[in-house]
Figure 1 (cartoon, rainbow, N blue to C red):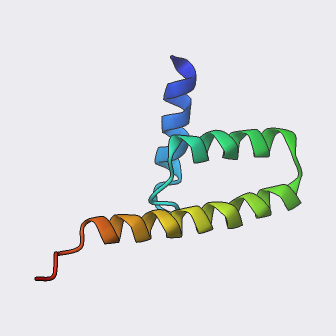
Figure 2: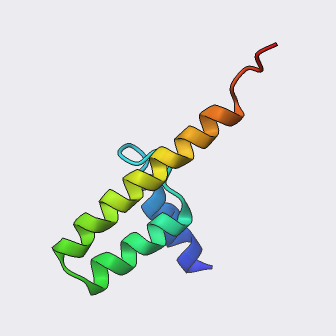
Length: 68
């Protein structure tokens, strides 16, 4: 239960910069920070930005007004 609370806290702390951060993103972020170097962290942020752009595109497409 405590790990869920911690993941939500990480997600909340990064909400300003990464609005669409998921719990999976927070989990990967923690693992990378604990067990790898700065090069891997940079790759993680690039991958996360790509995933967030795709996620935003899906959100925009889903909530788009239908054209009749």
